[in-house]
Length: 225
Image (tube, rainbow, N blue to C red; front, side):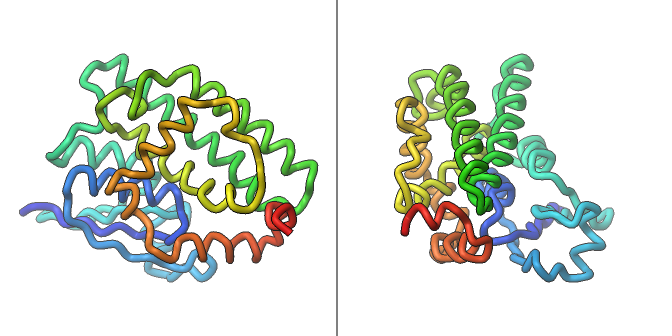
């Protein structure tokens, strides 16, 4: 029996987008179920020990297994599914890619602070942290168009959702985060064209993200006033 895959998701979650992008790059059929994280259903809490998305429910002839944590899910997809390889074959290079995936998660931590804070000082602190982190990414990038050259990888799947936030943020304020990182800016533009990246969210993503900022009374919105 071929395993069937069900991805428990949220429309805004960047960690969900990683898994969606990986599945689409592999050409793997899956069912996506979006839930409301403000009112988590009981069936979801039984599946997710941490109460977080994504959760990938894998059903095969031995039963059902729920995988949680986005990088774990992406690694499982890479190891079990056909299609394009999303990790380098070389063990050292593969480990390096995994390290940059973790760095992407650290960037998301600062990004959360940037988008949710109501405090100008915190906003500036998070902005500076992002400037510093993207400078490190800039130093790691080669000729492109992707993180490791011509081959799309899981590192690209991690960073594409990060860059997507800035499609709205760029409209709200001149934050200057990408001012001195031309390679990062080019990478961002190339990822935005990728079909798997474009289709990882719905057409309502910008409206949902703006509504999220409104609910948090985000300082970012005040900069746009």
